[in-house]
Structures are given as C-alpha cells and as structure tokens.
Length: 262
Image 1 (cartoon, rainbow, N blue to C red):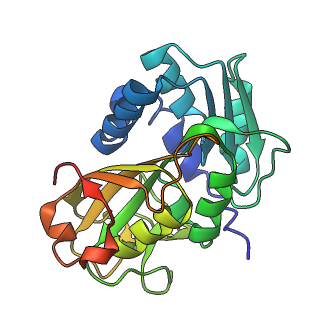
Image 2: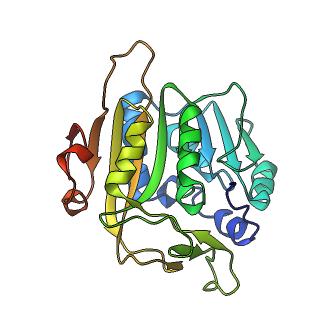
Image 3: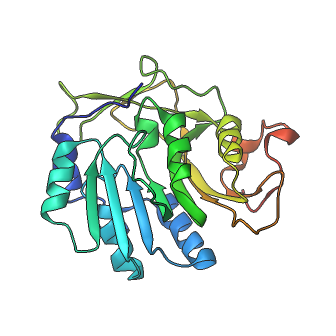
C-alpha cells in the first residue's frame, strides 16, 4: 500500500513561509539536531523526507553553514514545484512517496523526517525504508507522537484535517498516527542502531486532529547507524529526555540500557 498523495494547496500556502528558519522549528527538533551535531559533527549531506519547500535545508545551512548537498522528497507536487523554483545550488528535489522513493546507490550522513511519517498510512515501512538510506556512521532523525496508552494507526480512529488557515471545512484528511512508547522504542531498536537519543514533552493534540488522546508526548529521536568495524552490540544505548510518567508503566525489558534524564 502506498502513502496518501496529498493534493491540497494548504501545504504550499503554509510552508512557503513557515518552517524555513531555524527559530520556526520545534524545541524538540532543535535540541536533538544540536545534540547530534555536537556529538557527530554538523550536517553535510542530508535527505529530507517530507521536505515541503525545503525549509529544513535552508534552516540547517543558515544555522550550521556546513551543507554540501541536500535532497528533499515530498509527495505533494505543489510544494516540490515551489521548492524547485527557489532551489539553491546545493539543493535538489524529488516528487515521490517517501515510503517508496529510490535514490539508487545513494546514502546520506543525515536522513531527516520531521512531521511526516506519522501523517501517512505506511508509517512503519517508511521508517524502515529511510533507515536503509542512512550511511554507516550516519543518523536517522525522526519525529513521532507517543502515548503511554494504546497506540493507533487507523485514520478512522485518529486523523487530522490538513488545514492551517480556515478551520478545515472541506480539507483533506491525514492519518494522525500515535505510537505506544514501548512499541516505538521496540521498532527503533529493531533497526539496529548503536545509539538512540530522544527528546520530547507532553502537549495537546493539534486543534485540527480528531483523536482519542488528551495529551501526547511529541518526541524527536536520533538513531546512529554503526560503523562496520565498530563494537557489536546486542542492544543500543538509549538516552531519553522525556516526561518521567511517559515511561512509568514500562517493564524492565521494554527499554534495554536506558540512561539519561527524564
């Protein structure tokens, strides 16, 4: 099954001027990006899955001044058309489903997906596909909505109107995927990273979401792909800065080798 090919012009109207500067990104995104840049070096080659008009690339370049090449992939043809019209020499754009997009022979130092994979039907396959495009020693940086309750991926139960301006009358509908925290961590561990960082906090669902949750932990993760000659680990090191009550109900086996702050 493919992800939804969104056609609404709401996306290009919003992203033309939003999430194009560093200060327009969420705290969770900025904290994790700063952390991995400090530990592993600033971004040089980036794949942005769900790129809209390429604002992340502009923000990263303005903040770090290190980008050599940025590739943006988005399923919405209108945002890609605008991105291509205003592209910088170091940017290129592909209109495709991030779950099935193929860039033969290419891997990237950073593969980033913010506010994208949990807006689609094929969330888990998309995450697994993006991991294959991370270079050895590189990073997958991804945002997820978490709960300590049962997660949901059924858009009949949890969905969001794609509307930024007029309240949503007639708007396209996107899945509003929410992961149980233990299931999310299990999925990320199964990819085979040697380090998982996470930073998140409780907040209310979007005003345009129809969802059973009163609060969600909006969390950004960074997964480091091991180098081929690195130590073999049965489980990764996990460092989370998230609300303590998000983790309160987890069994000891749900989160191996967790350290850091809550």
